[in-house]
Image (cartoon, rainbow, N blue to C red; front, side):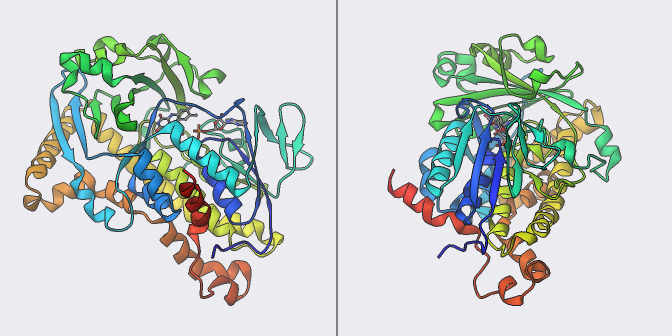
Length: 473
Ligand SMILES: Cc1cc2nc3c(=O)[nH]c(=O)nc-3n(C[C@H](O)[C@H](O)[C@H](O)COP(=O)(O)OP(=O)(O)OC[C@H]3O[C@@H](n4cnc5c(N)ncnc54)[C@H](O)[C@@H]3O)c2cc1C
């Protein structure tokens, strides 16, 4: 049986992106009233693909969505690396090393169509009782009541506000923005702003061109590495949707319209110079009729819990990791699962602030670890420094060799190439929250029975409704 909270709270979730939708779903399943406020008139329909890394597919399986994964996602078996200016191959890494992670309850690394995921969670949320209001803009907190203030002046009351309003969240102003990374040398090497430009591409167009035909494989996530920039290409929906993207440092002024994905036809507006790219990569961008771009500011947060005690940040509102990383969506699902499972244990309203503090305590070390590892990884992949670049090429070459013969793998090389990525992907949110609750739950709810009863902490609160969803497909 699903575990439900002892008290039903009113949650207002701002933003119907993946983070907001997943959080809304698990909170509704934990027995809470949930209202989602979304700025767009209707839900977002993007043509992009989402990298569903193992920590994310593990959560979806725990929520009973295995069949949906099999139907909508496609498995990604390798990563190919190319030099962005010469086009030469730097290596192809098989993800067969994923077998161990798969054996621990995840579906491995997969690629999902962004809009199918959004559709799926809207539908699941509706079935779980989530209510939605589209076309409303939250501007922050009402100064009198600390509730959600809309641009129309309307105030929406809430026991808890979940800010899932993306990288330019209007709720970031309420949390302490401060130094986040202890590794300042590393942080100083990362530019303060990035442009992320994505262009939908069609597999038919690619197949028509003999230069490109052999380049893009459906089950591969491909990277082109340049000096300070990175391009990636992937397909989902078994080739129906494809995406080519570039992430470059951005030196211009970040305008308000840059805060969300904006359709555009001029790459230069985002500081992207296609002429420096190898010919095939240029062609790939040119097969797209339009693209959409967004400016990211690299502003990690010291805390993700607002001083008002009522606001918590999830998804990109909370994580300032680097655009183009395939860990973004997984972190959003981990946030949701942590929230849903914690708030399925709440007994009384006056425990809210302790539960929010617990959320922060569980999530922040994880976010910090992923952020720092992503910074190091990005520097290693895109540094113009000749020594770093030579070392990178040699590492990719040796890792590629192990594809052929993994029994000859050098542990040190494997750890350098995959070590932190494997740690990130092996993360089991359920296990983390359960362990945390066993240790500290009693200090929050007061009685040992409530904190450490016979029942496991139920991360799978969503399982029942998910099963209904699958049955009715
Ligand atoms: C249109 C779109 C397309 C995307 N395509 C891809 C893709 O192809 N591949 C990929 O890996 N990732 C993609 N992403 C990003 C991906 O969704 C995120 O990386 C991750 O899933 C976590 O997102 P999020 O929910 O935290 O933020 P977002 O996905 O940015 O969602 C934030 C939501 O909050 C809404 N919002 C913002 N401000 C307000 C406000 N003031 N009031 C009310 N609502 C507000 C936004 O309209 C948006 O719907 C896309 C995001 C968007 C918005």
